[in-house]
Amino acid sequence: MAIRKEKAFGDYRKEGHLWITLSTGEYYPDILPLACELYKPVLVTFGHLLKAAHSSKDLFMAIADTKPQWMRIQLCRVFRKYVSPDTPVEMLKKKSAAQDICDRFGEGFRAVTEVQKRFSERPLPDEALCAVLWEYKDRGQKGYDLTERLFTIVRDKFPELEITGPERAGKDVLLGELFKDYPKPDRPVDFVLAHKGLPVAIGLARYDSDRGGAQEDDRTGQYRDCATEVLGYAKKHDLPLKVIFLNDGPGLLLGSMWRDYDYIERSHPGLIKVVTLRMIPERITMKWLLSK
Image (cartoon, rainbow, N blue to C red; front, side, top):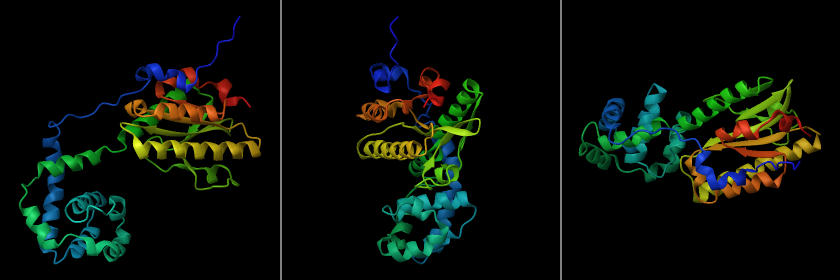
């Protein structure tokens, strides 16, 4: 009897649309009433701070002192739109770095008088800006849904395995905490599978709503580096470690993403598997996880 050849990730490409998971989205303009209700207090607060500010630097320092954190983060996003579009939001969100940001980027801030004029010209609530802020609300939500479903599948299909990592939001697993002598101790991974206390697989999980160009190259490049590093360590220490890249979403169907992931999987035969949620029951097995 002929032995059935196991399918590689690339073999699913022709019918890739049948193997991806689509997360439900929200319709425009249906979201506007809720968006305006949620973000009107943010715009009102921004208006009060703007009116009292004698400079854009002064405005930013006032935002940095605002509590609670959620309000401060939203105010930073509004500040970026009106005052400093070139300053990364992640940088603005760091309260402790407020003075340093003003020193380094303050000269490029839009004049507060111009900001006051522009802000006063917009309605309150500003539907356009509320819609933009709404887009941030669920950023990362699809990724959290993906990992949560992964944990459920693993616990159901592999009760003998222990899965650790952030089930939704939370701190990544650092390989330096898993392996004391790991060469890059701050290497983050999204989940670890262990059997009888011994790690048998590490994994990264991403949901791609859309992807292409430089972002696509960055993602696959990071995956290659991670796989090479982990498997090199495993070989050196004679560990039965595998690497699982869980990727899902319509972004997989764009550009060369599917081919690039197939190349990564084939670069270390039998040691890497790239899967979508729907592929897990078919492609991830205890036999593979425990093989050497």
